[in-house]
Length: 502
Ligand code: BGC
Image (cartoon, rainbow, N blue to C red):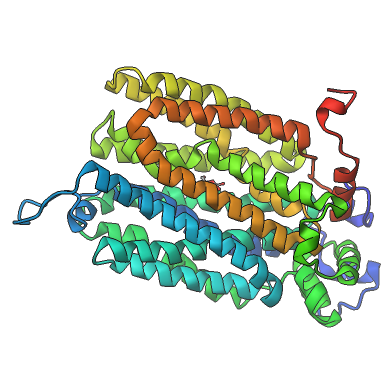
């Protein structure tokens, strides 16, 4: 629990926090401040979270096209009845194509995340969000148009880059605009948007699968959200923390007045940050303030988020279920899983600030582990529909576990782990890790699961087991703490093995 801050901030009350109240108390020169409340912060966090909608729509869209007749015919994976002279692709070619469609997207995203650590510092969070959306629109347009597979691959790199850029910038922007007592809940909006995007795409895919050109909408439909994001940015304030380092005092005050009811407290933090300025790369990797250890921890945690296999399910659920069920049943089953993913995220909204981040990560991991083991055992059994239903049930419970813990919580915790001075660069590196491992899983899974689906599930189970151990030993609780308190918590933190309460 936060110990610093004004008395007012410890009693957050949505109905009372108008800025004219705060002005009178703090004496701050905020005469121009409009009467804006928590609702406005939720609104701007939701707009920033549109990046998540784009992200989720892509994840579910790309996976489903692999079983769409129109897509398979267009890229000659399968021959249409009237396509005389067509030679269908081999299993190896299809596995390579799928691996590259997902893999190149991930490489683009890793580059985008790292690139944005620089751009978001130089141009600000708001402009960079717009730039990211533009890069995405460029890539998505290429994909939707792709006449041949090579063009599709080129489009995947750019759409991935745009999404990687958004995934670095949106969570940072939300975290920097949010007052700490609701920082977790607001941060969850990012994941919620991802999961809504996934549900939306998988629901649409049922209809799109029936259209010859349906796959083009699966790859390009989310351009609409990118356009909305760009238009909304015109009305959004810049992050006060970025302005503290780069803007004038007046700009900081104006931004604060728009977004935060705890002006006095945030203003104090922002002033401290202004004095400190931005850290060079060398500081991000030095062990001053345990920074190197934190960067490695963030990198490793995001790696585990992927190594526990979530995107094997997200990208390839239609394919996995297709081994037990018909094509349309597989797509419907995927929609069920994706809806569960989305609804379970609300558990986080309700609990992440009250229970804290580390508890949710531990509980989620403990639920995911046995389900992965069960899926592993079932996958080596005979592939009947009965076994298929059992796999579906365990996959659903696994997804619930992920959706309230490792999914949303890491996107909240990683920006929180670093002080403003190093945040842009450090978060860029950690998000890059997320995408490197997304790429690895995306590229290797089609080949590995053809060799042994069971072994893949056992591997994922092992990863989540180790991941929970890493959280237990190394991670500090960041909920409701200010940046300074989080610094302190890392400095005082002892690995659990060295603590008396182990
Ligand atoms: C992960 C994504 C994943 C999504 C599924 C996110 O937190 O970073 O890789 O596809 O959750 O909901």
